[in-house]
Amino acid sequence: MFGNMTVLGTGLLGASLMQAAKARGLCQRALAWSRRPETRQKCEQQSWCDGVYPTAAESVADADLVVLAVPVVNIVPLIKEISPSLKDGALVTDVGSTKSLICRHGTAAMPPQATFVGSHPMAGSEKTGLDFAREDLFEKRACFVTPLTDTPEPAVEQIVHFWRELGMEVATASPEAHDEIVAHISHLPHILASVLCDTLGTKNPDWRNYAGGGLRDTTRIAAGDPQLWKAIILENREEILRAMQGFEEHWQAMRAAIANNDPFAIANLLEKGKTYRDAVRND
Image (cartoon, rainbow, N blue to C red; front, side, top):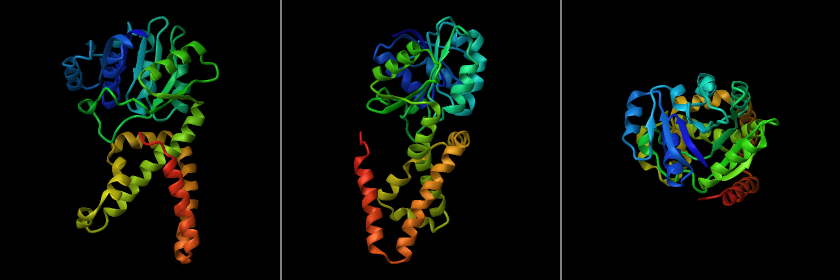
Protein backbone atom coordinates (compact mmCIF):
# COMPACT_ATOMS: atom_id res chain seq x y z
CA MET A 1 0.00 0.00 0.00
CA PHE A 2 2.79 2.43 0.86
CA GLY A 3 6.38 2.89 -0.16
CA ASN A 4 7.67 4.40 3.08
CA MET A 5 5.81 4.23 6.37
CA THR A 6 7.14 6.23 9.30
CA VAL A 7 6.08 5.45 12.85
CA LEU A 8 6.67 8.18 15.42
CA GLY A 9 6.95 6.50 18.80
CA THR A 10 8.11 2.89 18.96
CA GLY A 11 6.53 1.66 22.15
CA LEU A 12 4.18 -1.32 22.26
CA LEU A 13 1.76 -0.04 19.61
CA GLY A 14 4.30 1.63 17.34
CA ALA A 15 6.74 -1.27 17.27
CA SER A 16 3.93 -3.81 16.85
CA LEU A 17 2.58 -1.77 13.95
CA MET A 18 5.95 -1.79 12.20
CA GLN A 19 6.25 -5.54 12.66
CA ALA A 20 2.73 -6.21 11.39
CA ALA A 21 2.96 -3.86 8.39
CA LYS A 22 6.24 -5.38 7.24
CA ALA A 23 4.98 -8.94 7.75
CA ARG A 24 1.85 -8.26 5.68
CA GLY A 25 3.64 -6.34 2.95
CA LEU A 26 1.79 -3.08 3.60
CA CYS A 27 4.92 -0.98 3.17
CA GLN A 28 8.23 -1.39 1.41
CA ARG A 29 10.20 0.36 4.16
CA ALA A 30 9.26 0.86 7.81
CA LEU A 31 11.01 3.89 9.29
CA ALA A 32 11.05 5.04 12.89
CA TRP A 33 11.67 7.89 15.27
CA SER A 34 11.59 7.82 19.05
CA ARG A 35 12.31 10.58 21.51
CA ARG A 36 14.65 8.41 23.57
CA PRO A 37 18.11 7.61 22.13
CA GLU A 38 18.13 4.17 23.79
CA THR A 39 14.85 3.26 22.07
CA ARG A 40 16.20 4.41 18.71
CA GLN A 41 19.23 2.22 19.28
CA LYS A 42 17.00 -0.79 20.00
CA CYS A 43 15.03 -0.15 16.82
CA GLU A 44 18.18 -0.14 14.72
CA GLN A 45 18.80 -3.72 15.80
CA GLN A 46 15.40 -5.01 14.67
CA SER A 47 14.86 -6.80 11.36
CA TRP A 48 11.49 -5.09 10.87
CA CYS A 49 12.98 -1.59 11.02
CA ASP A 50 14.54 -0.20 7.85
CA GLY A 51 15.74 3.10 9.24
CA VAL A 52 15.83 5.21 12.41
CA TYR A 53 16.12 8.99 12.48
CA PRO A 54 17.32 11.37 15.20
CA THR A 55 14.50 13.87 14.59
CA ALA A 56 10.84 13.46 13.80
CA ALA A 57 11.02 15.95 10.92
CA GLU A 58 13.78 13.99 9.18
CA SER A 59 11.93 10.71 9.59
CA VAL A 60 8.80 11.88 7.71
CA ALA A 61 10.44 13.66 4.77
CA ASP A 62 9.97 10.70 2.40
CA ALA A 63 7.03 9.03 4.13
CA ASP A 64 3.84 8.16 2.27
CA LEU A 65 2.16 7.22 5.56
CA VAL A 66 2.98 8.69 8.97
CA VAL A 67 1.57 7.09 12.12
CA LEU A 68 1.86 8.94 15.42
CA ALA A 69 2.08 6.38 18.22
CA VAL A 70 2.91 8.74 21.08
CA PRO A 71 0.91 9.74 24.20
CA VAL A 72 -2.22 11.75 23.41
CA VAL A 73 -0.82 15.00 24.85
CA ASN A 74 2.12 14.82 22.43
CA ILE A 75 0.22 14.08 19.22
CA VAL A 76 -0.83 17.59 18.17
CA PRO A 77 2.49 19.23 19.10
CA LEU A 78 4.29 16.54 17.12
CA ILE A 79 2.01 17.09 14.11
CA LYS A 80 2.90 20.77 14.21
CA GLU A 81 6.59 19.86 14.39
CA ILE A 82 6.57 17.56 11.35
CA SER A 83 4.07 19.52 9.26
CA PRO A 84 6.63 21.55 7.23
CA SER A 85 8.53 18.37 6.33
CA LEU A 86 5.62 16.30 4.97
CA LYS A 87 5.81 15.38 1.27
CA ASP A 88 3.06 15.95 -1.27
CA GLY A 89 0.26 13.39 -0.86
CA ALA A 90 1.38 12.21 2.58
CA LEU A 91 -1.23 10.60 4.80
CA VAL A 92 -0.98 11.13 8.55
CA THR A 93 -2.86 9.16 11.20
CA ASP A 94 -2.49 8.36 14.89
CA VAL A 95 -3.37 5.72 17.47
CA GLY A 96 -4.62 8.03 20.21
CA SER A 97 -7.35 6.98 22.66
CA THR A 98 -9.12 10.34 22.39
CA LYS A 99 -10.11 11.96 19.15
CA SER A 100 -12.06 15.25 19.30
CA LEU A 101 -9.18 17.60 20.09
CA ILE A 102 -6.60 15.58 18.17
CA CYS A 103 -8.63 15.41 14.96
CA ARG A 104 -9.57 19.09 14.91
CA HIS A 105 -6.22 20.53 15.92
CA GLY A 106 -4.29 17.91 13.96
CA THR A 107 -6.22 18.66 10.77
CA ALA A 108 -5.76 22.41 11.28
CA ALA A 109 -1.99 21.89 11.54
CA MET A 110 -1.73 19.97 8.26
CA PRO A 111 -0.04 21.63 5.28
CA PRO A 112 -2.09 21.79 2.05
CA GLN A 113 -0.23 18.85 0.49
CA ALA A 114 -0.96 16.35 3.31
CA THR A 115 -4.06 14.87 4.96
CA PHE A 116 -4.77 13.86 8.55
CA VAL A 117 -7.24 11.07 9.36
CA GLY A 118 -7.67 10.08 13.00
CA SER A 119 -7.48 6.43 14.07
CA HIS A 120 -7.78 4.46 17.28
CA PRO A 121 -6.91 0.77 17.12
CA MET A 122 -8.45 -0.88 20.19
CA ALA A 123 -5.38 -2.98 20.79
CA GLY A 124 -2.77 -2.94 23.46
CA SER A 125 -1.83 -4.32 26.83
CA GLU A 126 -1.09 -3.24 30.36
CA LYS A 127 2.53 -3.82 29.32
CA THR A 128 4.38 -0.99 27.62
CA GLY A 129 7.49 -0.62 25.51
CA LEU A 130 9.15 -2.08 22.45
CA ASP A 131 10.16 -5.26 24.28
CA PHE A 132 6.51 -6.35 24.49
CA ALA A 133 5.67 -5.62 20.83
CA ARG A 134 4.23 -8.43 18.76
CA GLU A 135 3.19 -8.86 15.15
CA ASP A 136 -0.33 -10.17 15.88
CA LEU A 137 -1.36 -7.39 18.28
CA PHE A 138 -3.98 -5.97 15.90
CA GLU A 139 -5.56 -9.18 14.61
CA LYS A 140 -9.32 -9.54 15.21
CA ARG A 141 -9.42 -6.34 17.23
CA ALA A 142 -11.66 -3.32 16.69
CA CYS A 143 -10.40 -0.06 15.22
CA PHE A 144 -12.04 3.36 14.92
CA VAL A 145 -11.34 5.69 12.02
CA THR A 146 -12.60 9.18 12.84
CA PRO A 147 -12.68 11.59 9.87
CA LEU A 148 -14.09 15.08 10.03
CA THR A 149 -16.98 15.91 7.72
CA ASP A 150 -14.65 17.56 5.19
CA THR A 151 -11.89 14.92 5.25
CA PRO A 152 -11.27 13.72 1.66
CA GLU A 153 -13.00 10.37 1.14
CA PRO A 154 -10.07 8.71 -0.71
CA ALA A 155 -7.82 9.39 2.28
CA VAL A 156 -10.39 7.91 4.67
CA GLU A 157 -10.72 4.82 2.48
CA GLN A 158 -6.96 4.32 2.41
CA ILE A 159 -6.67 4.48 6.19
CA VAL A 160 -9.64 2.14 6.64
CA HIS A 161 -8.09 -0.31 4.19
CA PHE A 162 -4.73 -0.11 5.96
CA TRP A 163 -6.17 -1.17 9.32
CA ARG A 164 -8.29 -3.88 7.72
CA GLU A 165 -5.23 -5.33 6.06
CA LEU A 166 -3.70 -5.59 9.53
CA GLY A 167 -6.59 -7.88 10.49
CA MET A 168 -8.71 -5.31 12.30
CA GLU A 169 -12.47 -4.79 12.22
CA VAL A 170 -12.85 -1.12 11.32
CA ALA A 171 -15.71 1.22 12.19
CA THR A 172 -15.92 4.88 11.18
CA ALA A 173 -17.31 7.43 13.60
CA SER A 174 -17.14 11.14 14.23
CA PRO A 175 -14.46 12.13 16.75
CA GLU A 176 -17.18 13.14 19.23
CA ALA A 177 -19.05 9.84 18.92
CA HIS A 178 -15.77 7.97 19.35
CA ASP A 179 -14.97 9.83 22.57
CA GLU A 180 -18.41 9.04 24.02
CA ILE A 181 -18.07 5.34 23.18
CA VAL A 182 -14.56 4.84 24.55
CA ALA A 183 -15.38 6.81 27.71
CA HIS A 184 -17.81 3.99 28.51
CA ILE A 185 -16.08 0.88 27.17
CA SER A 186 -12.43 1.73 27.82
CA HIS A 187 -11.79 4.74 30.05
CA LEU A 188 -14.47 4.03 32.68
CA PRO A 189 -13.36 0.38 33.12
CA HIS A 190 -9.77 1.51 33.64
CA ILE A 191 -10.81 4.04 36.26
CA LEU A 192 -12.95 1.45 38.05
CA ALA A 193 -10.08 -1.05 38.13
CA SER A 194 -7.67 1.57 39.43
CA VAL A 195 -10.03 2.86 42.13
CA LEU A 196 -10.76 -0.71 43.25
CA CYS A 197 -7.03 -1.38 43.60
CA ASP A 198 -6.59 1.92 45.45
CA THR A 199 -9.37 0.89 47.86
CA LEU A 200 -7.88 -2.55 48.44
CA GLY A 201 -4.52 -0.90 49.01
CA THR A 202 -5.86 0.54 52.26
CA LYS A 203 -6.53 -2.95 53.63
CA ASN A 204 -4.22 -5.60 55.05
CA PRO A 205 -1.54 -6.31 52.38
CA ASP A 206 -1.82 -10.03 53.10
CA TRP A 207 -5.31 -10.08 51.60
CA ARG A 208 -3.89 -9.92 48.09
CA ASN A 209 -2.32 -13.35 48.64
CA TYR A 210 -5.78 -14.91 48.93
CA ALA A 211 -7.12 -13.41 45.70
CA GLY A 212 -8.34 -15.67 42.92
CA GLY A 213 -8.88 -15.12 39.23
CA GLY A 214 -11.78 -12.75 39.81
CA LEU A 215 -9.63 -10.01 41.28
CA ARG A 216 -6.85 -10.54 38.74
CA ASP A 217 -9.28 -10.39 35.80
CA THR A 218 -11.11 -7.37 37.17
CA THR A 219 -8.00 -5.33 37.93
CA ARG A 220 -5.53 -6.37 35.20
CA ILE A 221 -5.80 -3.07 33.34
CA ALA A 222 -4.98 -1.10 36.50
CA ALA A 223 -1.36 -2.11 35.84
CA GLY A 224 -1.25 0.30 32.87
CA ASP A 225 1.06 3.32 32.77
CA PRO A 226 -0.42 5.93 35.18
CA GLN A 227 1.07 8.91 33.31
CA LEU A 228 -0.34 7.73 29.98
CA TRP A 229 -3.78 7.19 31.50
CA LYS A 230 -3.73 10.50 33.35
CA ALA A 231 -3.36 12.24 29.99
CA ILE A 232 -6.17 10.19 28.41
CA ILE A 233 -8.54 10.94 31.29
CA LEU A 234 -7.87 14.68 31.19
CA GLU A 235 -8.28 14.80 27.38
CA ASN A 236 -11.68 13.08 27.56
CA ARG A 237 -12.80 14.36 30.94
CA GLU A 238 -16.29 15.58 29.94
CA GLU A 239 -17.35 12.28 28.38
CA ILE A 240 -15.77 10.34 31.24
CA LEU A 241 -17.67 12.40 33.81
CA ARG A 242 -20.93 11.60 31.99
CA ALA A 243 -20.02 7.91 31.93
CA MET A 244 -19.21 8.00 35.65
CA GLN A 245 -22.56 9.63 36.40
CA GLY A 246 -24.38 6.84 34.57
CA PHE A 247 -22.37 4.22 36.44
CA GLU A 248 -23.09 5.87 39.80
CA GLU A 249 -26.83 5.57 39.15
CA HIS A 250 -26.52 1.81 38.61
CA TRP A 251 -24.13 1.48 41.59
CA GLN A 252 -26.64 3.23 43.82
CA ALA A 253 -29.39 0.91 42.57
CA MET A 254 -27.35 -2.12 43.64
CA ARG A 255 -26.47 -0.50 46.95
CA ALA A 256 -30.13 0.21 47.64
CA ALA A 257 -31.10 -3.36 46.73
CA ILE A 258 -28.53 -4.76 49.18
CA ALA A 259 -29.45 -2.29 51.91
CA ASN A 260 -33.14 -3.17 51.53
CA ASN A 261 -32.39 -6.90 51.57
CA ASP A 262 -34.20 -7.16 48.21
CA PRO A 263 -33.25 -10.49 46.58
CA PHE A 264 -35.31 -9.82 43.46
CA ALA A 265 -33.65 -6.47 42.72
CA ILE A 266 -30.21 -7.96 43.38
CA ALA A 267 -30.89 -10.91 41.08
CA ASN A 268 -32.27 -8.60 38.38
CA LEU A 269 -29.14 -6.44 38.38
CA LEU A 270 -26.86 -9.49 38.36
CA GLU A 271 -28.83 -11.06 35.50
CA LYS A 272 -28.60 -7.88 33.41
CA GLY A 273 -24.88 -7.74 34.07
CA LYS A 274 -24.43 -11.36 33.02
CA THR A 275 -26.48 -10.84 29.85
CA TYR A 276 -24.25 -7.97 28.78
CA ARG A 277 -21.02 -9.79 29.65
CA ASP A 278 -22.07 -12.91 27.77
CA ALA A 279 -22.54 -10.82 24.64
CA VAL A 280 -19.14 -9.12 24.83
CA ARG A 281 -16.74 -10.31 22.13
CA ASN A 282 -14.07 -12.61 23.49
CA ASP A 283 -11.16 -13.04 21.07
